[in-house]
Length: 466
Image (cartoon, rainbow, N blue to C red):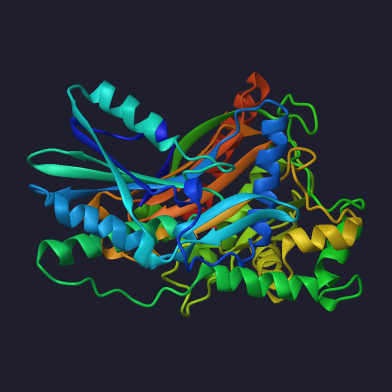
């Protein structure tokens, strides 16, 4: 699975269909719906950001979506049943959100009351029109008012492309391969006259509720804050590590966002890099992190690399096949001084990743409240923040079929106040998806950094040195 800008989506023309979940909140929720669930910390913060930017007259939107292909002539009844099955299976997709006194209030529509609204768009005749239509359709989610999930299909005689988008309020990056796997598996079953058989998918609302209770029990002296306190002390008293290169921006200002994809290493060269990393006791993720730190240093960054790292809270248990926003954020730091050798920097990067793990149960939004006495969450990050994300799609549900399905993931946001790097690995190699502010300085900085990064990664693979 590749993570791409939606502008790079390939879309042959065909007959377009759309589905949205019935707007149950419009005329009151069905009897038996649950009005008492709590939004997670991430959902609360994301909703607040959307409210603030909307109030400032920004047309802010942020979604995570995906697409895949069904070969041959599609069974439309089976496809609609598979889409309905997805929404019924994952409780978070049946939530109705509204503004509340403490973040978003949410209510859950029972699965038996879920309906899909179908719209037959009709024939789209050219590839350019098909791409433009799908891009516009996927932008149809709305954090504050819904819909929070949209689904569609471009149907042809020889194949069908299925696509969907979830507002970021609902899902994280791993939820995309989960959704692709669920829809494709359920479709194959229904088309064959069978009921789908999928692994258990536990409720994200249960997970988020447990996180809120755990966070509420934390106090300023909680041991789970120790890692953060030490990081802040070494980071000049700041909770957020600054992105160290010039982006040509003012702190706290939201800019239109640019979304770009780069291929970094082909699979064979990446395998060689992985072997080099393991030879000094490091994992591939640590090698990529180290390479980014070194590359930033070579572009004028500091001798100590600091970043915020999103960490999955799914584990390998009953949440592995769930959709939701199972992510916490933790800090890492390690030296990247010019006179440090490969083994030394790798040890620092691997050690930084391991050092943060015991503190994964400290929710970032709650940490912010306790360490800043803000009590409102970060809302909008105050300046361009150093950010690193790494995901191996080969280890996600349905990975064995990603090639056959032509599976793709799309992360889209209209605005940014910095630069974000999503590194990801699939069967073809190592890739980077970047979202950053639309300034001439940011474009130059990002292009130069990626060039240096590719050279650094290639050097590791070839020589075992930076």
